[in-house]
Length: 444
Image (cartoon, rainbow, N blue to C red):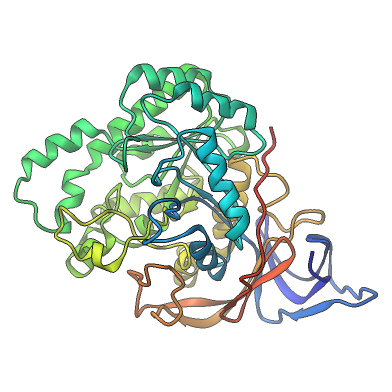
């Protein structure tokens, strides 16, 4: 562990409140929160005057591409981009090459993260049509694995799960959280036939349309209700899907939860004219009325979490013709600042951003001692200068792919420090590459 740290004169944003305090960190944890702290002995002091101190962002959906796709990204490279954006913990998806569809392959990813990740980490177990028994072994790892991931729609490799017997067995016998990518493959294939001449990204939301999303999400919800399964539906992108979710229960009591991603809150189909394949992703960014509906549902708590679905590809891959260009965009370094843009606009409060990006992921996944600024919790923290302007530029992009759809944009809120387990891993533009995060632990 690093030497003790005293953060002085910070404006804490935590659990719906904003107030001024000092925070003393020792042995990786928050030891004391008080108006004035004057500890004995040696320590490092960080002056946080005029800055917000937030819990570290927890991103429950990223694709860091290792193993097998490391020309796009690695666990190490994207974890550095994450901490530069205030993301202290991530949960990574199984559609790598080979996909994480056996316990051995899953543990190999954990081993790689232990050796290379500056951020805390967890990895989803992947489901295929033919690995049910292997998936169910994850029941014995409830404290060590964030959940299992089912692609109920197109995906990389053989990870499309469209066999009802497989789905029914997983939903009925798993003791884990199931996270789903919901798009109906039959609807998508039928839509492709309607647009045989589709030659640019504006066709993407017509092919992967509202119906494709709703049909798949509806099926997942029905299965979860039938078996009382703990279900978390990823990256909701349509107005129609929102009827499947409730705000009548507190998050801790929900068995079915969902998330929205920053790009679905930020972009609309109108942006394809300028950005084209750079914002081609699955599920697709759709017409403006969907964005407005997502914002409403986020603010009234039908949508539980804000995440990224960070999914980098090389610039050369994205410049291919529409049909060949892969889906996904890199976002993990800038998700907090994207939301600070809307704080500045008055669309959402900073307290609500912290709730949806820090507290809610911790509650949703039953994380141990993270997601809050609390005495005794791990010191995963981010310091933001809210009045400073940050310009996204190739010189400060840390993604291995080297580009962002936000290039040239000015975002409010410069991130000065990110702490992971009580160690400063990012400070004024520089990453402490020697630090290693921890494997996330979950309440069984």
